[in-house]
Length: 179
Image 1: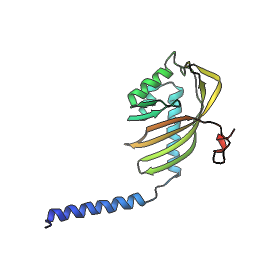
Image 2: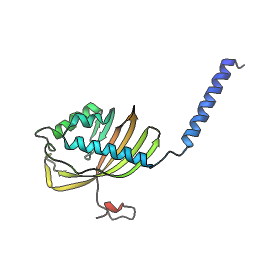
Image 3: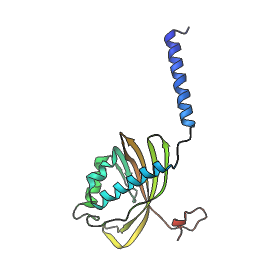
Image 4: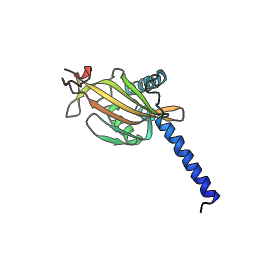
């Protein structure tokens, strides 16, 4: 036997499910000018903080629980750990303490939910030798993927994944990926 509270609960659950289904089926604005502007602004802030060797400012561009996978496959979990790693890289004596990097170049941006944007950017960084020293005469071409979350009025990185680009001459390789 259904009570009025059971009926109300069923109605609310059904209504919520219908609203969620229509939301999930709606095609988000994949690459709108507004999304590109958000991505470009984020990348600009990132490279500015990077070139100022400001690990704290880089950390503030991330969520508290942000994860980073660096170009060597190391997973760094949480903003505090990322700031610690970036401090090592950028403080005096660190490999990047006096090196500036060129701007990241936006490749693609997609909004996958109202408060979630994924972007890919190309970046060039000096080659890091196994001893941890940079070879400034050589550079790695890199692909950086960011998952940005809207936190209040700001977009922050919740996930970063950096990869060195290997040159390949395959039919499905990107033009910049070919030797």
